[in-house]
Image (tube, rainbow, N blue to C red):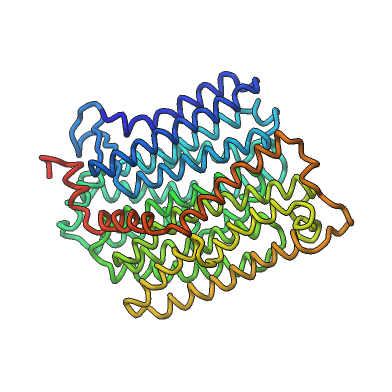
Length: 499
């Protein structure tokens, strides 16, 4: 048993149990924060150990792969665990001021930490069935968080969210059954060895499309994304932020893992589909955002459009493109979670998220305005912020192989993203408040100001660090891309003598 692998998985569930047992006490919020800080420490230890030793593997119960349960971490999964821990810690600080005692009594902190545990489990699992299990853990806890409070709007959004995700689950299980039927294994490394040697490669391609649809729902790809903008604007802002940062990225991670490790034998078929899906996801997401006039709905549609960039990198399937996809994943989790946190403070100050009903924040809350501009400009791809480097790598990867069409779409969507961010700036920050009010930050007590603005400032600082010092992050993404495109080390680490 490698405790470097077990600790990040164990601590969120331990924290969830403790916070549930004392959910009626305000101490629970501090235990939740402490648990996520410990998770952050374990994630840092894990990534440092992987940097030193390479891929880490644990076979649960000493059952060797492919017969037992495998937990495995490489560069990509360790990076995703670290960014999950950073986001969870930031949101935990914010939630102390954002989540009221009623929602805490209903079990907010327990559900939150179960969700984080499910996300980390999905990143660590080495077999398909346990990936399904972790998806279900995420679905149950996220549904609980989504409807926490029980408003009509939340129930409506929750029903749409869970219905489409249950359809995705059925497709996922169907794909698992078919794949096990022809391959006789569900271990990812073993599948990577077995699937290319199967006689019926046509059936493999059909199963690949089934997984593409199932994970496409989770990732909110075109045309399966409607559940996301219908639900992400309804819960508490802490919930919206963690959803926006992490949930769809688990679907993207699953697509990247499956279509680099297992379904890589018919690239012309599968990755051409992925390329068209990426283009349509970018376009429909950004156009949907342009049509909205609510702070959170605009941001929700932009989650969809930005997912398209990540899938573009997977579809191009070159070392540079996969590097861009990995870099984009990390960048987007930070930026998108941060924008939802900013929207929450704007809601506290003005009472609304409808852009027509708010305004004056630049004059009355200049610090908040600055903290909005950093992730907003990064999302739009302004140099030298992290979003610029992410888009630059992907566009360069497309141009390098003469994929002019997808490169032009990526650039056009970037311009339309600037339009949406400018729209939020003009309406929420620049124009005077419609009622003539001056929503000062001083309306929030000093303790809550600190709790609300500190995580926003820390995430903005991280965005600046990645933007101004991109080289180590790009090098890390390059190594992750190399491991994905040349999975022999992953296979050898997992299977050992069984390979």
